[in-house]
Structures are given as structure tokens and as C-alpha cells.
Amino acid sequence: MAFLLLIITLCLNFELTLLVSLRKTTTALPQKNDHQNISLLLDNLLRGYDNSVRPDFGGPPTIVEVDIMVRSMGPISEIDMTYSMDCYFRQSWMDKRLSFFASSNYTLALSISMLAKIWKPDTYFYNGKQSYLHTISTPNKFVRLHHDGQVLYSSRLTIKAGCPMNLEDFPMDVQKCPLKFGSFGYTNLDLIYRWNKARQVAIADDMKLSQFDLIATPAGNNTINIFNSETNSVEYSMLLVSFHLQRHMGNFLIQVYGPCMLLVVLSWVSFWLNREATADRISLGITTVLTMTFLGLEARTNLPKVPYPTALDFFVFLSFSFIFATIIQFAVVHYFTKYGSGECYFSFSSDSSSDEEDWTHLKPRTSKSVAKSVEECSKPNPRFEEIIHLQDVISSPPAKPSAQKLSCLPQTHPPGMTARRGSAMSRRLSLQTNNSYKRKKRSPRFNSVSKIDRVSRILFPALFLAINTFYWISYLSKSSKNI
Image 1 (cartoon, rainbow, N blue to C red):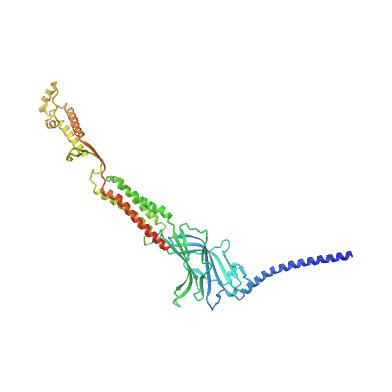
Image 2: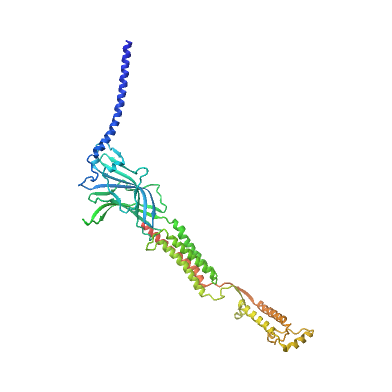
């Protein structure tokens, strides 16, 4: 009996082990069959598939929906008039030949090797210059196949496209850089491009530009007519997106506008200098002119040689004109300046205005008269030698003649007494002259100021302020309208 129970127990354990193994086998078989089914499915889809023929050939045109995700933008070059951007370029179209049966919305992630086996649109960029596909570490592209035959093709591209810029308002300009793309060979009857309704052009949240602000990205559908020798004109479907870029002005305010204003203000210092300080005013004017010339040339180093002046050129020319006008103003002032009119001197005023005479004009004449008297007194006269000898013998001093009489007396001094008599007479004349000037009131006078300088101190700053106000209002209002 016990032996029978043992045999029954062993049989039950064997049956349980068999059931468990069968369950594991049944659960593993579907997974293996799925891989085989997918491979068989793709082989069946590609059997008899011609990738050189577009979907719905001979019927309505194939519709390709496009959307762009911009990751970064730059550099933006004014010299080449180009811009670059890194983006995800996505294209989606319907190909009924690749549809397969599925109970739900099933999507297959395919290898990039499938791109060579299926049809895809020949999209190219009309204004592209040096665009390329990222290939590190593998080609940055993928394909998604939906059960209804919809194909999603995405690739990461760096696009360098042309941007025709209008630099008349530089550096307060708003540039509109377009991106145009469409089919290279299919006409409007075979292929039509449309923007994805859910998302057209998306911008990454962390994207920043160094010199510009991206303010708008309007997109639209368009057609382009291309001349053909057979049909004269062929229409191609094209999509257009425009990137509106507003330039930053901070760099130009620091490097150009600020120094130009300071140089103009510095040139006005000459209005407060003495009008006879020719060397100082000329050196100040020449220095400001040369510095202004250097700033004007430096401001155009990163700009193309456009045939029209920019807003920055107008401001540099305006500042240069004011500095040059300062030098011309000094030339006019110097032309009307008389010799000695601006020197610092003292004048003496008496009771009547007709007796006023400048010290600077009287002093040279007094010195000349004293020198003349000394020279006349130095000449010996033998006719009066005895008279002078008798005056030396007499103990009493001779009467002091006046300066006027002394200058008229004949010179009878002996050779030994000539120098002493001349020096004494010079001292007497100087004392008499000083005493006569001491009796008059001394009134100091300073450098005379030109009326042209007085007017220029007010006219030049007022005119510069008015022109600057008109300049900034006109260009800033024009820039706001372009946004």
C-alpha cells in the first residue's frame, strides 16, 4: 500500500513539472514568433516595392508634412550675409504600400538602412550654402513606420543659408533671414509640401544668441515658378520660414556712440581757452579729428562694403562734422584777433577818460627816452669843461635842474663824470615817472573773450542735442515698425 502511494506521488510531481515546463515554452514561443513575424512582415512589405516611384503614382500628389525644431542658431555674418542653425528636420508622408494589419496603433522603429529601400522626398534648401548631416557617433536620423503606412523621417542638420540683409538702419536694424526648401525634381503636380498643423517651427527654451534676439518665426506655404525650356514655366511647392532677428545695441553704444559723443564734447573745450592760445587749440582739434577718424574706420571693419550709408555712418559723420566745425570756428576767431588784445595787462585810469594809457604801451616808450637821454649825456662836450671844473671846486652843491631842462642842456660832462651823471639822471627820470603813475588808479584787465566763442558755447551744444534727438527718434521708431 505504501509502495502504491509512493508511485502516485511521483506521478503527480512529474505531471506538475511537465505543466510548468510547457507553460514556459508557451510563453517564450510568442516572443520568438514576433521577431520572426516582424522580419517576415518587412520582407513582405518590400517584396515588389519600387523605391523610385512615389506613393500614389498616377493619382493625386503626395503630401509631405514638415516641422522644424531649432536647437541653436549662429553665427550670423554680415560680411557673407549668411546665418547658421542646428535643427531637427522632420518629414512625414503617407505610403499605402507600407501599411500592415494591426489590432491597435502599432509603430515600428526601423533601422536607418531601411531609408535606402523605401521612397523618400528629395527635399533640398533653395538658399542653403553649406548644410550637412551630423554623423557622430552614427548618422543622426531615424525612421518610424505606422500601421496605416505613415512614415516619419527625422534627421539632425546644420543648415547654413543665405540672408539678404538691409543695413540702412544698422545697428538698430531688424533682419529677416528666410529658409526656403522644397522638392528638387517633383513638380507641384506630384509633390506638395505643407507645414505640420500641430507644430511648425519650434524653438528650444535654452537657445540664446550673442548679438541678436529672435523675436518671430512666421511660416507659410508658397509656390515657386521655375523656367523650363520644354514647358516654359513649372510650379514647384515650397515652404518658407522667416527668422526675425533684432540686433543688440549695447556693444555699439560702448564702442562707438559713447566715445564719439565724448570726443565732440571734448572739442568744445577750445571755446573756453584763450583765443591767442593757438598751439593749444589747434593741437586739441587735430587730436580729436584723428581719433574720430580711427573710430569711424574701426566701426566698419565687420560690415560689408555696401553702397549706401548706414545709421552708424550717419552718426560718425555727424560727430566728425562737429569736430571739424570747431577747428573752422577757431580759424575765424583767430582771423579777427588783434595782436595784444587777449594778453593780460594793467591799465591806469585818471579823472578824464582821455588820459587813460596802458602800462604795456607806456613802458617801452619810457625806456627808450631814458636810453636816449643816457646816450646823449654820455657824449663829451669840451665847451663846458671849465664850468664843470668850477662847480667841483665850489663846496656848495649846484642847483638841481628839472628833467625837462636837463634834457635840453648841452652836454659838458668830462669823460670821468659822464657815466655817473647819466645813471643819476636815469634814476631821477624813473622816480619821476613812477611817482606820476602812482598818482593814477591801477585797474587790472584780463584776456578778452571773442564774441564768436561766447555764441559757440551755446550754439554748438544746442545744435548737437537737437540733431541727436531727431536721429534717435527717427531710427528707433523705424526699428519698432519693422518688428
